[in-house]
Image 1: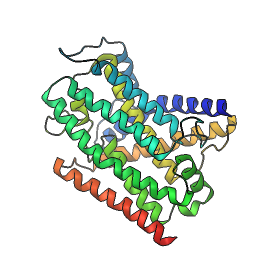
Image 2: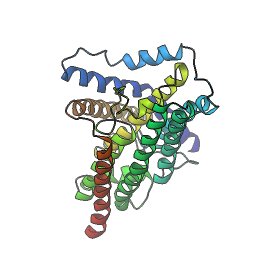
Image 3: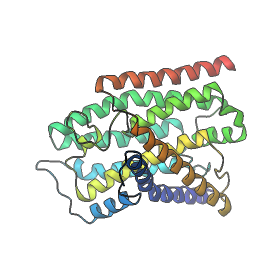
Length: 315
């Protein structure tokens, strides 16, 4: 069974890695179409990755080993998140459980690695982006913990696979006020964690507004490819988690080939819908001013806290 769970996790990582650039492509293409532009096509992120992988890596003078190892750590943490989250199957790894605190810790490793890369070059933009990035992370992590904790109360477990399995067995939980409050709070936290509007605009290079782009300005070639793919993979994995919490049907509960095929198709459909909705939503959203971001994230934390409170009042 251990080998089976490992094989399922590796298959899930492979699918998530292949799909992540397509999710970004769908988001960009949807946004382009709604803005009246032709767009580069949903395969353009894959073309960008292949181009970057063929280029030589250039680094600024005076950088340390962090700039070389950081992109690998970011990519590794994203791959581990994709392996832990119940995206295709609820089967968990035997040695590394998909516990709430484990997943948040893995996410934090990638967050800190990106911030260190921004600081390592010693540029003003990198330092500014890293400072903003860590401020947002400090506000996001408590919201994720509290929101998922609220969702874990009906399941009686902090394992994400158990939470999704409980929602699959008892669909009435999905439409409960506790669930709706927690999922909305978690979705806002995901937008902030992955640097999407209204918290950050991934398509801008304006000095006063960029966060993620400021930290990777000094990266190039293969290092930039790993950073980009790692961030895309994190977005796809977290979107897949939110999608499975809202619509758990289609997830494989065993390791049969048919169940995994159905789970893969269900994940692709969910990510396509959510990516298109994300792109459409960004057309009508403006980036918040920096001092307004804590207010948004504080609001999401309040929703998560209300979800926990309501769960105890209901029970």
